[in-house]
Amino acid sequence: MSEASNRKIIHVDMDAFFAAVEQRDHPQWRGKPVVVGGPPKSRGVVSTCSYEARQYGIHSAMSSYEAYKRCPQAIFVTEANFPEYHRVSQQVHSIFHEITDVVEPLSIDEAFLDVSENKLGECSATRLAQRIQQRIFEETQLTASAGVSYNKSLAKIASDWKKPHGLTVIPPQAAQDFLKDLPVTKFWGVGPVTAKRMEKLGIQTAGELRSWPLWRLIDVFGKSGPWFYSLCRGIDERPVCSLRQRKSLGKERTFPTDLMDVQQIATILDGVCQDVWEEVTEKKLQARRVTVKVKYNDFRLATRSRSFPTPLKNLHQFQTISRELLQETKAGERPVRLAGTALSLFPGEEGECAQLELPFPLI
Image (spheres, rainbow, N blue to C red):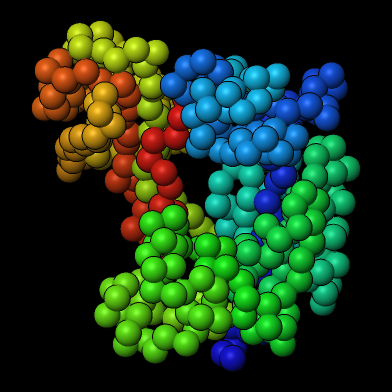
């Protein structure tokens, strides 16, 4: 093991965050299946759902229509209370900073903390994780799951091990036994496509992956080979980065019906631009690249981008450029089901710990 095995990393993940906030604020919904996302008979998607809804096989990114088919009696929250979600997220992150300032946010509801050295002088990362869970519940009446280990990958796996309100600890001496039978689908970076590919190669667990030499993993998986080689051995040297910059900030809109009128799409895109510009202005960011995304009715994607030597000056410029980029797609010639826009190339984003975020969160 390297010196990194002496680190103490905590990964905290709020349980069914958006849905949990809604159940907290609407007591009549507690204990019932709650789905936050698009309307049930629309082409929207599930953002988050309560654990009661998950019992019906509903999960995030599933279509709202499919969620409705699985659980018609579910409560669909189509007007998400994002201001409240952000307020609660700020409360939670304030609690993190009571412990340490080495905090790496992954999203609105999860973060890594390096507590190797901490403000409380506490030597036990497990006790610190318990304290964080308790403080979150005291402040927000919500629960969080936590994972404790010596690196980020294992801490993240651990936080998902006993949800909701779970706490799992993977110390260095237990890591190899823990990993031996762990499904490779639990690893960061192994998505459905890669998992299926591994299964065809006879790799379903970390133990089976560990039997492959590095050269063969590189030969089969390319630049991901060394990453997989390290993961199955419990090696992850990445630091917890407290200074993080957005790579991009954008929004998209799925239309109730496919649109052929490019002017109608452009008008909708103007509104999306306004939402993005308000957030960029609020965060005091300056952008030098505009990207427009279009999804046709056959689900094929088209993106068009334009970069500039100096930051965009105002919303009107942003909207004008977005309209011009829209004209470079086949919108108007082919039916369009979704359109979005994003801003990127923010100052300082090339830093070592820059955060790669999904550029088009749903609105």
